[in-house]
Image (cartoon, rainbow, N blue to C red; front, side, top):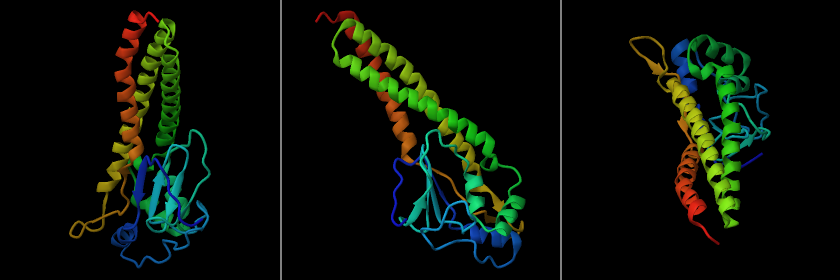
Length: 226
């Protein structure tokens, strides 16, 4: 597909050091783990990419900082990183990775998928409520300001819960960052890391902004005499 950009990004997962992690765990040369073809199909065991970026509607996989391909963009996309990564690996390497990672939230695809699926709808409802609050406020009528207040309260609650779920999910999946393999005398990181993207900060900023709008809407509802 060539140069692609996923924005806003919820999560980035670099896998550039996973070759070294597998080597430390297996003590065998690791060949064919990655692909250098930016247009290679996803989830077809065509080779691991160096970077994976997740958004609310899908994900993109990159062989370098910009060249890669993206999945189909769908509403309520489920965040299941381990399932995605291992489906890009050759069968033997996905089996080795399964053997190495025995317990971590990162590999619990049903848990991650269910919660992030629900968080999507909460953020969507919160966004719609924010838009409705703005539109009602433009009407400049006491009843419209009352509706704006109600929409702002509901939207703030939805954004708060949705952003909290995503933040907790990311913090839990970050446990993979400290996963150590190899001999006790020569430990090595697994080479898969999770980092938070800008979309989470945008969600928290949206919550704070909408929350701050409640009091002005409420005051306008009680005092406006237009």
